[in-house]
Length: 333
Image 1 (tube, rainbow, N blue to C red):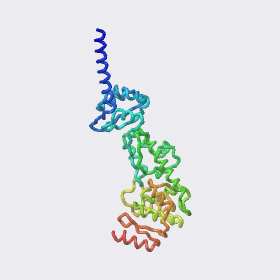
Image 2: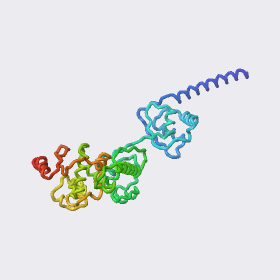
Image 3: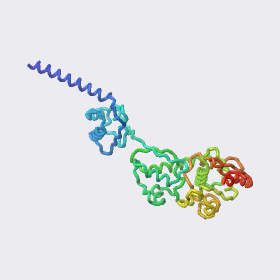
Image 4: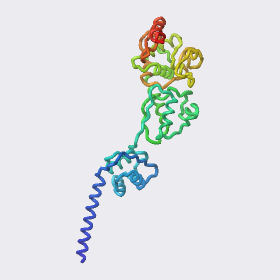
C-alpha cells in the first residue's frame, strides 16, 4: 500500500515539476503579443503586485506569479525604477522586467525652432500635458526669470533653439534650464573663437547681434554678409536700421506692416532712431547665427535690401543701395 501511494506521489510530483518547467519556460521565453503599445507608469512605492495589476489592466497577457519569481530570480525585485514606460508588442516577461530595472522610460520631445521668441517657448511648454507645469504662464517675465535663477533682466535670446527630450513629469523649469545651459555653452564656445577686432564688448552683445541676423535672413549663405553689414555700421557709429528690431519693440502694436510713423516712434528697439545694438536679443538665435555674428564676411557692404524671394541685394554705397531699393521695393509698388 505504501509503495502504491509512493508511486502515485512520484508520478504526481513528476507531472507537477514537468508542468512547472513548461510553464516557466513559456513565461521566460514567450513573446507577449499586444494589439498596440501600452503605457505603464510605475510610481514611488509601487509593489510588485501593484505593478502586475497595472500590467493586467492594460491587457498584458502574463502570469503575475512568474513576473514576481523572475524579478526575484534575476535579483532586481527591489530595483524597478519609477517612470512611464512604453511596452511594444513582442517583448518577453524578462525583457519587460529588465526595461523597468534599467529605467528605460518613455521619452517625449519638444522642438524650439531658431528665431522663436520667449513667448513662443512658453506657449509650446504650456501645451504639453506630459510636463509638470510650475511656471505661472500668466505671470510677468521677472518672476519667471527668478524661478529659473537667471540674473539677466530679459529672457529673450537666452534659451538655445533645439529639440529636447524628456520623461513624463519633467518640469517646464527643468527644460528651460537645459535650454539656458545649452545657450551659455554654445555662446562661450563661439566667443572663445571669435574673429579679431569686432565692436562687441561681451558675449551678450554677440547674442543680440546674432538674434538680429537670425531674423533678417533664412539663407545660410547670407548670414556672414548680414553680420558684416551690421558690424561695419557699429564701427562707423551708424544706425543699424533693422526692421526686425523695430517690430520687436512694437510688440502687440505690430499688425503685419511697418508704417513710416513706426520708424519715427522711439523705443529702445527702434534702430532707425537709436544708435547701437538694442538692449536685448529680439529672438532665440541658433549656433549658425551666433557663429556668423562672430565671424563676419570680409566685405565692405553697408546696406542690403530684400529682393522679395527671401534673398537680399548687398551694396557698399548709398547710391548703389538706392538703386537696389528702387528696383526691388519701390518699382514693384
